[in-house]
Length: 179
Image (cartoon, rainbow, N blue to C red; front, side):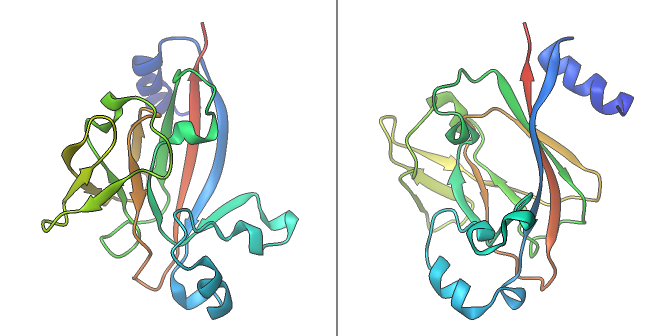
């Protein structure tokens, strides 16, 4: 209900919108993940720790870094009439799993996961090989407590694992435009 927040969302989606989904997202450092779970997570594209938690503890998404992906993955048959809103609830440094986004990648439309990309010699660039095969910059978004970020559901984004030793907590909302 914060007026600054609602005004910003209204400027993007118009007067009729609603929260489609929301959840807390926690990036966990290896120090708090048992070694046997780390081994099982291995090189998974989406190392979500939820499957190792009791059902009542799954309301929070816990992960150990996440490969570049599009949020449309959660709604593969849906028109992209929503945005992802991410609110940092901790200070986010380069060592606390900052979001990494790939500007202009949404222009390719929805692409099948996992996405075929490789890091280039310059770690801030990727070669994305899909039907449009192209090189892209990767931006790393550090931030302060309360910083709000939002993007199109086709935008490639992800994180690296937390290396600071402290969990990174954020809030993710999916907000849809209502006609």
